[in-house]
Image (cartoon, rainbow, N blue to C red; front, top):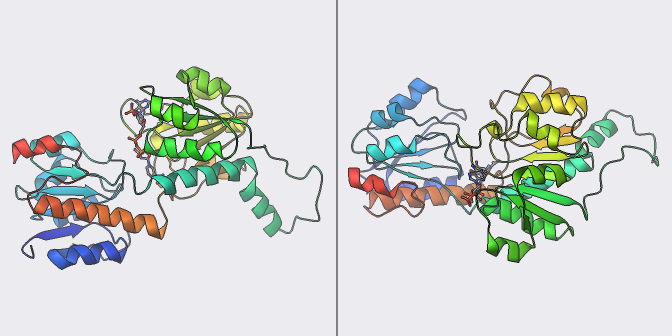
Amino acid sequence: MAQFNVYVTRRIPDTALDVLRQRCNVEVNPEDRVLTRDELLAKVTGRDAVLCLLTDTIDDAVLAAAGKQCRIFANYAVGYNNIDVAAATKRGIFISNTPDVLTAATADMAWALLFAVARRVVEGDKFTRAGKFHGWGPLLMLGQEVTGKTVGIIGAGRIGAAFARRAKGFDMKILYTGRSRKPDFERETGATYVDFDTLLREADFISLHVPLTPETYHLIGERELKLMKPTAILINTARGPVVDEKALVAALRRGEIWGAGLDVFENEPALAEGLAELDNVVIPPHLGSATLETRTKMGLVAVENILAALDGRMPPNCLNPEARNFQ
Ligand code: NAP
C-alpha cells in the first residue's frame, strides 16, 4: 500500500500514525495548529485519504480539491458536523468517525463538570490560591448536593447513556428526552422518558448529548433557560452551537439558572462576551475526549477506517456507505 498517500491535518498520538506509516506514505501537518483554509485546500490535493479533525471544515471545495482518486476523509471525532457528508457521497468519498472509543472519557468529563460547578471546585481553588482561605467556615462556599438529585439527559445515545449509568452510582432520578424512546436504556438505568419541556422544568442538572445538526442548533435558548429551575446546572459536552451562548450568559447573570459547565463553545475558541467573567461557570477548552488512552484509540479507529477504504473494503465506521455507488 506504500503507493497510497495519506495526509493528516494535525499531529495525533504516534501509536496510530506508526500503524498508518507501516502501509502508506504519510504526511502530517508539522505545526500544532489548525491549517488555514488555503493550506487545507493545498495539502489535501492528490491524496488517497485524509485524516481530518473537528476543527477542519470539510466542504465540497475541499473534497473537490482532494481529487477523484481520494477514497476517504476519516474524521478524528465522533461528531461530524464539520463535514458536508452529502457532498462527499456525491463525490464517492467515504466519511468515517470514531464512535464508542471516546464514550467513557466524554461521559466522565460531563460528570467532572457537574461536580465542579455544583461543588464550586474551580471557584474554591481560585479562592485558596488568592490567599483568601482563612480557615473552615460553616457558610463558606456552599454548593449543591449531587447525590439523590434529578438529572435530565438530552440525547440518550452512546455518551448520554454512559452519563446515565454513572448517575445510578449517585442514587439519582434520571429523566431523558430525545427523538425516540429507548426501552433497553430505560431497563438498564431506570430512566424515565419525558417531553423536552418537562425535563427542563423538573431536572436539577441537565446534560446535553445530542449531535450538532440544523435541528439541534440553539436547542437551548432564552425560552428553555427560563423553564429551568433557578438552581439548575447546565452541562454541555456536545457541541457549542447547541446552546445560545449569549442567552446563557444573560440567564447566568440574572440568576435564572445556578451555573453551567461547558466543554464546548458556540464560536470556538472564542467565548461569548462576559462568559469568562462569571464565577458560576466552569469552562475547560474542549477536553471531552482528551485522555492519552482515548485519543490513541481514536487515532487507531481513524487509521482502521482509512486502511479499509484503501484496501477496497467498507470502512467499519463509514457514515455514507452509499458513496460506493459514486465510485
Ligand atoms: P449518538 O450515540 O449518536 O447519540 C446522539 C443522541 O442524540 C441520540 O440518542 C439521538 O437520538 C439524539 N438526537 C439526535 N438528534 C436529535 C434531535 N434533533 N433532538 C433530540 N435528540 C437528538 O452520539 P454520541 O456518540 O453519544 O455523541 C454525541 C455527541 O457528543 C457527538 O455528536 C459530538 O458532537 C459530541 N461529543 C463531544 C465530545 C467533546 O470532546 N466534548 C466528545 C465526543 C462527542 P436517536 O437515538 O433517536 O438517533
